[in-house]
Amino acid sequence: MKAAIVTEKGKPPVYGDFPEPQADDKHVVVSVKASAVSQLAKSRAAGTHYSASLQYPFIAGIDGTGYLSNGDPVYFLAFTSPWGSMAQRTQVPVGGIVPLPASLDLVQAAALANPGMSSWVALTRRAKLHKGETVLINGATGTSGGLAVRIARHLGAGKVIVTGRNQQVLEKLRAEGADVAITLDTLPTTLPALMAEGIDVVLDYLWGQSALDIMVAATAGGEKVVRFVQIGSLSGQDIALHSKLLRSSGLTLMGSGLGSVSNSELVASVSELLDAAARSDFSIPFQRRPLSEVNHAWVEDERCRTVFTFDTKRPALAGGL
Image 1 (spheres, helix red, strand yellow):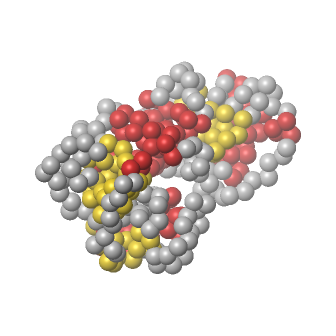
Image 2 (cartoon, helix red, strand yellow):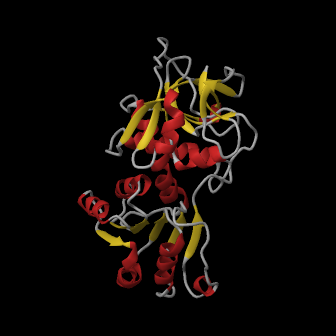
Image 3 (cartoon, one colour):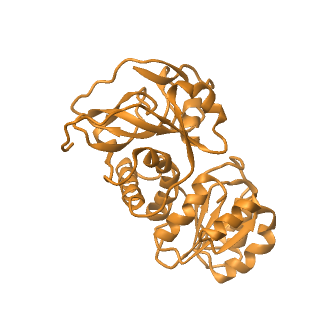
């Protein structure tokens, strides 16, 4: 079968032939319909992510949508090497299968699942958002951060504050429901007043200086508890965090990613997200590409999410898992 194959560390996937997967008592075979390129998929393929496999060759991709042999449409997580998601067929642990709502398009589901999961897990499992609370999304001008605005509203946030560098995108987010938009260069002067009004949860997609600016502002109020959830590190991996910021305040730091919640909770979160997506507008822009173009699409996927699609037909027989 055809697949996007990672042959060595630091090299992009290549289009080629890979052995067929086999089902057993703990795994099923999914006929893949769509699989999206994401930062997580890229970093695992490059061997730079903390969850990456270093045994080569393996199939690229960490999630996707497709059909079981009985015709059921599903979303799946593919973290077990060598079986990634970017192949005509792949082997998936039974526990990594999520049934898809009948009304949800398989390609759209593949596009939104990973970026949507980042904020859904952070808000429901890590920060445990309460209805009416204020959420600040640091780095909201990217796909995941922008989708987090709608997800936070869906989950009951009373006020949503967004930060970023791109003023045009920030204005667009205001039009789509964000209450306050702040450019990163104005954080030190703008945040104190907003913290005084009350910020309960921070979703941080950037790390770096902007994250530190937010933490400094959050600790100025003393006993006020701000739940800071670290999700991404687009602005760098390291910051100089003084210990007194934690000792002198109610600031609570936590991360959200692979390992911060159990696999079963991760699967449950994705199921909740996709059920909500079938009823709400969580759609995001994306471009369809055939897997045969993976060599070029892998490095071109910067401005618009790429979803590899397959000419997969739903099996005629439908039933349960």
